Length: 325
Image (tube, rainbow, N blue to C red; front, side, top):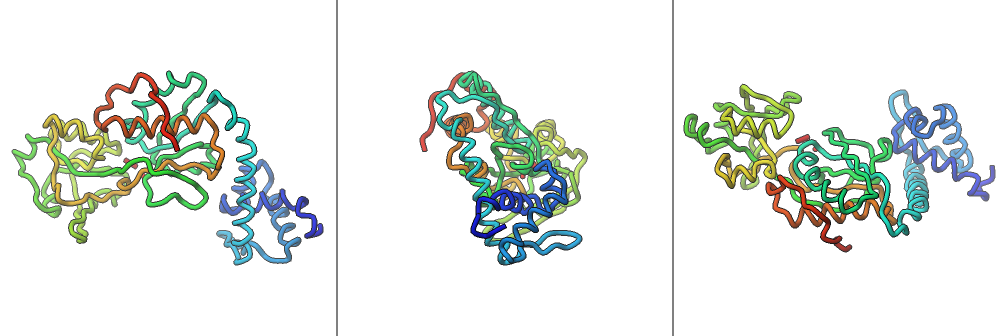
């Protein structure tokens, strides 16, 4: 195959990009519906055409060579361009239609996004929605996800995104519990209290805090442990102890006085605090069904105070231009 006939190598370039994204020949083969040997042959053929090694192969993992890194950056654009071409029909369709699949963590899905969906479905009767509510970090490409909501500093490589909202966590308790056991004034005092924590692994017992640039952590314990924020919330309301919760889960109960914030002058650091991003493949031509979903959610999250979402909005009022819980 001649290097002067780039069209002949396009399939091999696309397969090479998929191997890098998937992390192995076998994973890429599953995604592409090919055998691992066929995928390996296509990558080897591309290396032969280019006369450079693109991947260092070991028994455990693949590593890009310097030439492979440069080639991957360019080959990845093939996937992006292909998605953009295939999305053109949806982009230019006046009526949004089809299925939108969105992944998000449990508390965000249940308490922030789900209450908005009845209004969205009424506003867009030809758009279907699947919420994939999981604390697992999904692969948008492998799992066929259109959008993901994830707490992160910046969009990960290979994805585009826009900031959605700030997620803050705090520690809260019922007033009766604090009247009986006392109110901690320093994180280390939490070791003497009954705490409601995540409990998925031992690290969840180490609560982290920061104040004035100083970090501290404390190992907590308690009689009631649950890996869902709504359960921990209800446990705190029942007086079982001090709970680590997303601020949006506690806000309505703080206003009513059913919960009291603890250690307000400390920042409670968790894997799920930070900026929540809407992440999606880097496609400049988003399908109409995805654009209207993004616009609807962004508008209604901005317009409706968190904690006031017991009832979803009845209808769409227009569009905005432009980690475990």
